[in-house]
Image (cartoon, rainbow, N blue to C red; front, top):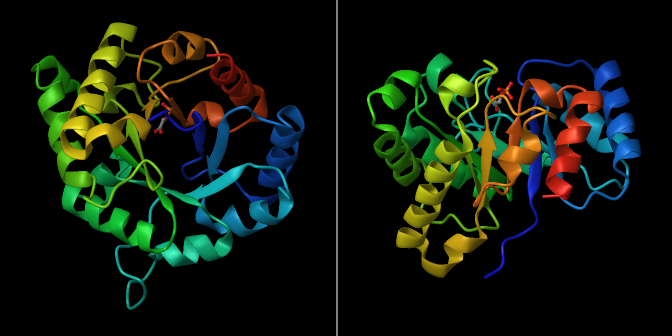
Length: 251
Ligand code: PGA
């Protein structure tokens, strides 16, 4: 099985209001009118519908940054997967380390959300990654393997699920693992997916995330089993995100 198109994904986190977001849609679509990779922006949920309208026919995909595992009900402040889809999202980030830390989300929560996302027709971007303490203790592969096994549901396919390896210590810090460290973890994730899903595992996109910038993107994208990136800070402006997209197109 050949792998699907590579994916350049931006996670805007809690940044962005309408005026700037609409300007970004215009700038990004003008800079990449016919992208050779899949492009995704996950803005705050308040912006999805407006950005979806503004992108017109451009293939830019939009995604949520979380969803609830239930379809509806008394869950103040939460958003159901179908509501994201209704606003124009086709993806949703799940289990980001900031949600695991800030909202105590467990692997079981992430798995339930991924099942809900699939039911709503969304593609999950399931985030896993070790802390610095875990890396220094030599437990990276155990931690990542456990998160992968428990967060990814049995119904996962390359079409409804993307894996993002994001070492917690590399997020927003400017610290990036060596290419050998990235290769080790991505190769491990691919093997583990193969053990579980067989030949279909080749089709899963495995993104790297954590301080990806225009200056280090080409080096990261040259690593085996890196099928794209989940980018935080450097996805906020086209000036910063565009060189990363171009590096992925050329990888
Ligand atoms: P960063 O964030 O690119 O700002 O390190 C990545 C992420 O949290 O997805």
